[in-house]
Image (cartoon, rainbow, N blue to C red; front, side, top):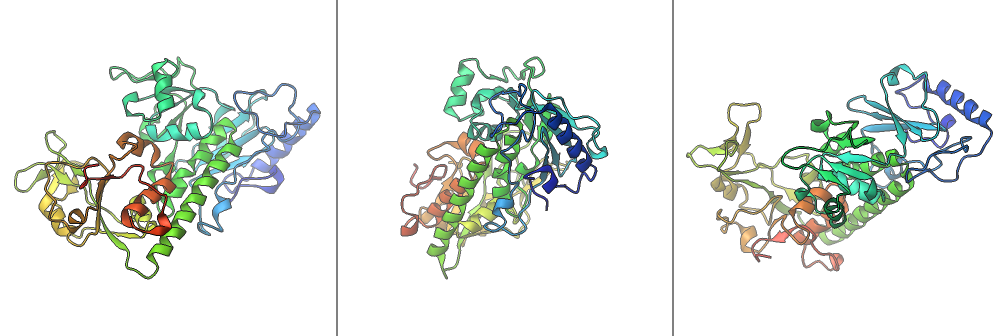
Length: 425
């Protein structure tokens, strides 16, 4: 896999063989201007004024290669970036979409290679951005670019960040009102960070890895802070943020290994209840409504459960309930009776949603031992959906404490999101 270049001559990504010629042309053009570039990236809306000679992006991302020795030798991402003196090309490995990010104050690159013929040109650093999901809000805050957020294409009731909520109350961030989204084009939005559902938004940039694909799903997803950082020229800040997360992840994983040693991993039942009362509710064979989600292997939560010293129980039964039956959206669910059977050997149960008070699971050993948790803990469910993706190290610590509450190796750690259901925290 290719890496971020230190200089154009040191990198040539396979997806653009013709780019080396462009790099030499750009270097020659900048050299003719005769002035020296800055020792750091231009950030905070700064544009080049006269200083256009040399490398305008001295701070570069390491593109995940900094973790091949510590996380996995085959660690890889679903995006690529190539640096040149005054611009950088970013390619989405899934969709093939290319963005040409050029330094403000310098002309946009021309004579683009065939692979980038339809590239979206973006002047960087961007100063006005929008998002379609709360999941992307922490990326922006981590980079120190909170003030650049001008719009959110949903209700701000879902946001948990105190600072962003205040900015919204103060009229600094527009959001959905009466089911009407802000007009991003009218607001002059440079970039909208979106998922695949939001690609019709103005100047949308798709974040594909947040689908959390195995392997190393949780860390690769968190590393999207580096991707977002490219648009702000905040590679230095992004590198520091992901390095801190990975360090915490590896440290916690090592502590868990010290706890587990030769013990059998904790069996974990992972299920969320979908209540009845609407057209898409699970319908059960006995005529009732409501059911429990069925856990799957090779998912972000199976990966993080394993890292925390547990093993996910994957039900080998057909659900008695189904939502949206007869449609492409049909999804099987377990009845409560089936859940009790599947979870008979579980030491811990976790619901990644609010626990239903009207469902009796008291016969589960996990319940009798006070080891049933949901995501309504100290930081709240909104914060779970907003920050879980970008703080995998904190999620790992939550699970480790839930699995091994008495372990001295985990002393000092506390749960941020998981709530003890039995204790009615």
